[in-house]
Image 1 (cartoon, rainbow, N blue to C red):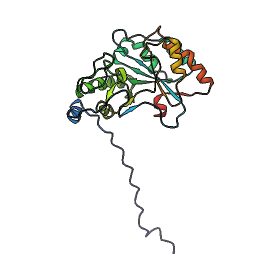
Image 2: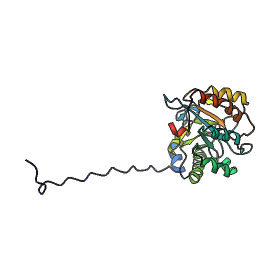
Image 3: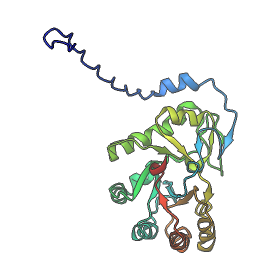
Image 4: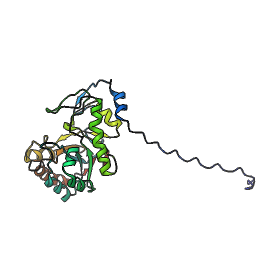
Length: 258
């Protein structure tokens, strides 16, 4: 027998889905309290929390370029960027705070170009350690508080300039211990390592860069540098990439697949 609409019990209104609560970013004091007594168990280029390749099954390759800043590191490789633009090749650019300060016009142009994604390359370009370990003669952060400073200060700078926080972080020298990578994660960023060292820390000549970049497998993250104009990076990349494109290789920014 049909129910009389006049006597039917009212249907309950659906309960609105709860709005996710954005986790509050920890303060320096929070991080020091959380990790100050934790001893690292690993150190290097490939430790827990470092992404060294694209997800399984991903056939693209990610080109990433660092701009380290500071004495001898504030250059801008316009030839490299012009080549990427001319061939519509996307890339993730890891910029240090000192480089940004030294190149405000170039930063604005790069940040406004959808071909590129801007990552955090630290405040003063230090290896990320809670015990002061160094890499390639560059002194690392000395404790948990200094790890926080190296990551968070440039993240705040980038957030103010970009209008959103950076998604990825790479330290100076790309060295970490496994406590420092946990701090980066707590600050809302993912640590980007690499599969292929494309320019040997901006020391390789054009022929060597062409060989390294050109032999990068599908799924690789390639690291290079965009702050050494006149070096081997730009001509080496320009020699390698057209052949990769002709062979069907796709290039992506890290955020496109991660």
